[in-house]
Length: 475
Ligand code: DGY
Image (cartoon, rainbow, N blue to C red; front, side, top):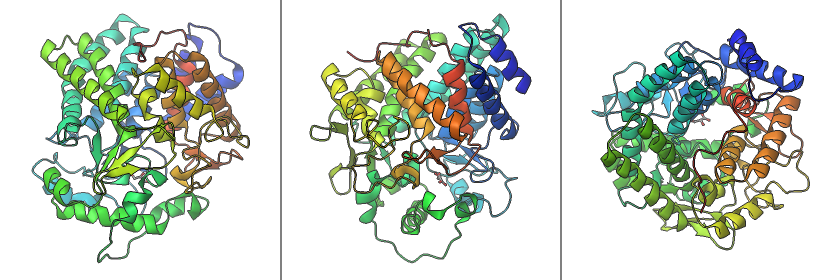
């Protein structure tokens, strides 16, 4: 892969990148090569030895610049474990992961395989899911292949034909099982499904969960970080595992979970990513010449999503808020998820976009005077639950910066997007390929050699900056 990286840098047709950036590209390529398990990539070498769903999608975005075929394989492997309902599981467990490396692992989730909807096991999967970045990644692979030779383009077209029905089934699952109210918003049953596990977004809804009888459990994750404070607290883990127990007790049956589960939340970040992914799916539908009926269906999902997100706007906070279905009220917390709409979902009023962008630039986020780099902390320093070292309670995350950068480009905000890209690259080139960073000191936290951090660096440095956004996504 290193040779491919070198070739990629040398054949980079749209201008030379600096030596420092060349080195960063080489390092990113080495990380992805070391984490390559043959057809799929572990999210990180020690802390996350399995295949995670949204990590894999971001990884494919990066791999697309090194080897479009390998990038396609990453998603092919993940989608091979798609459930019969269309769900893409949040983890596919690696049978060869070292013992005692991750909890809850395959044994804990093995019972999910008994569900009539589960794929063949082993390998086992969890029965949760994660934000659907996959169609965006597939489109990125297609775009990268378009710049290569005839053979790469033909192979990528073939891949799009193969993956399109699977993506459609995945989005259909989210639009139906996860949105029986037809609100346009996706329901999650577990903070792990949001990808932003211990964000203060979930504090209110989690506080209402009463924990019953539970056995003790190991915290293997704490062995892999410098300080336990970088990971979720044990009070949070108790609730995470209690919720898993309830999901298993409901036989992983979606309808049963919906009826009885104490944590039922409409997640705005997840929903906005789905809207952006539906936009990407429409472009894929064009390439594979899908039927008009299917295109209308996808357009309908995207439109419904935007409408649903519009209702989550909070005038006072200038942000989008999640909604707690059990308590029947919004979850008020100032976090990066608040940029879900109109920024990530796109195509909404310019007035709201302007309000949201001024929030992004304000001292509540990227304009805070004490930040090491002007990048938005995952939780606003002005929020009560803010903690600069703890996972999603404050640190800055490269993948979130990528998502904001990508969405700003789509919204025609190229200058703002470029500020994020430069600051994020500087952060990683100064302090390494960490999972997340302390926002005031820039200290790398969580895992190092994190695959998706390497992947977004490759996309930032090797994607064509002159390429027009795929569609004008704000009105
Ligand atoms: C973890 O283990 O921290 C993951 O986010 C759960 O999927």
